[in-house]
Amino acid sequence: MKITVNQTVIELDCGDITEETTDAVVNAANSRLAGGAGVDGAIHRAGGPAIMAECRKIGGCPTGEAVITTGGNLKSRWVIHAVGPVYRGGGRGEAGLLVSAYQNSLNLACKKGLASLSFPAISCGAYGYPLGEAASLALSTCVTFAQSHPELRLIRHVLFDRQTYDVFAQELKKIMP
Image (cartoon, rainbow, N blue to C red; front, side):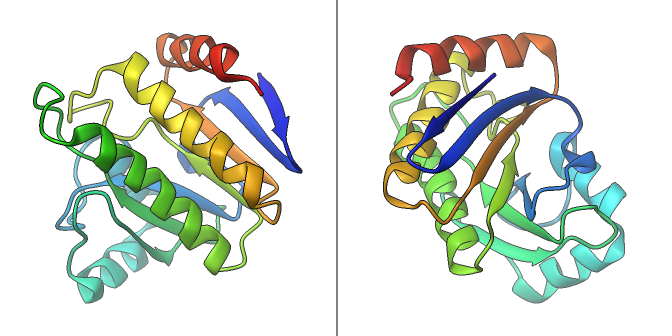
C-alpha cells in the first residue's frame, strides 16, 4: 500500500528490513546503541561489525533521538539508529518521544542528503508500544514531514509480519491526505 504526499511516496511493505535497498534503514535501537534483540539484533547481525564499531564510538543516544552509522554489509548505505520509548501506560511522555524518534530520523536523513529510508515499527516489539497508536503516530509524523520536505522521495515502513502490516494499513487509510 502506498500514498504520495507532495513529492514523497510513503509505502507499507511486509518484509525483512535488513534486505532493504533504500539509502538508509532505521534501526529500533536501545539508548546504549549496544545491539539487542528484534530489529536491532537483525540489523547488527546482517550489517556486520562495522556498525557496532561506529556505535561504540558514538557511545549512546537518548530516547527520542537518532544517530547515523555506516550500513556495513547491508544493501542500504546507512543505518539511522532511533531510540523509541519503552511503553509504560502512556502517561510518561511516550507519544512525544516516539514522534521525536521518527522526526529525528527523518531530519537526519535529509541532513545527510538521502532520498529514501525504511522504518521498522519502532517501540512495538520488546518496548511494548500499542501497535495501533504507534502506527498512527509514525504515519502521521511521516505525512506531516513529507508535506514540507520534498527532497525525501521515499519513506517505507517495512513491517515484520502481516498483523503489523494490517494495523499500519488501517491507520494509513485513516490519515490519507
